Image (cartoon, rainbow, N blue to C red):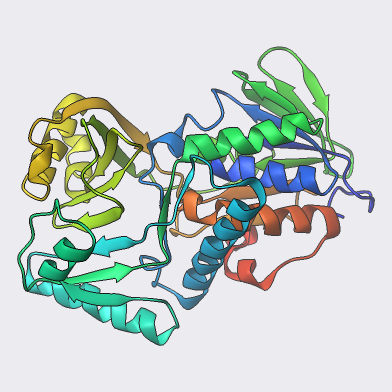
Length: 374
């Protein structure tokens, strides 16, 4: 009931069709809303396609409320897989982590102990046991402690977005791809009324959802709202290999890696991210990622770099999601977050309920847009 008129919203424009926008749109369409999906490019081919795509809560312990939201995101993924089928997007194979220096090792073991006290499933074994039971292709010391989070997963983000968008359109929704939002019109009461697109068209709407990822601050500015965002680039490389030698996502010393299908892997490293602003070309950054992975997985010695991309993560200034309605602009909602892969299904469900019924879920209490001063 946030469209300024007290009536149930009829037409909702979702701006940005990455994982968050697709999940919000899909949940709205399931509940009977008329949905228009708008994307400046092609759905799922922006940041969603260049994410490490790791579904987890083990890396989200900075506050208990953020952990709880991400744990709910994991559960929502499992529920979504049961509804639409896992197909080629859902890979619940767990996650491994180990380190090569005492300080980092002590830190991740301390985190594992904390997570266990919160009821999060965690197993600690040795390198030898991991090679024998789970990942024989790894080169890691026999006695090094390795943490397994068996309930974690990775997601093929573009495939999931394709599935969700396809269902929205099949149900009567509309997709406007390759067109940008140029303006948002409001009524005399300040509530959202129209969206103007770069193709010259203008849509009458009751609600707008800003899920524009790295462009979310610009979209917020169209309704005179300030949404401060971090500048945090990351580089991801895909490498081709005759056969993928690993079976799950993992954080090895200096490198993160996961499968990306039967003949491809994804590589990422915070250490290499730190080189982006030094002026190194993306191809050189990809080569450095490849160098980091080879000692960990010797079978990748002859792998080939297939793709590389520097992408900007959509992170609000304080590092936490911005999700929900903005009281000063009735009909305007935000769904902006890093960890969109983990959080997409739960944010989609909770925000759709808020838009259509006015219900504000306590899981989102610490992540409301109004915490940013205007």
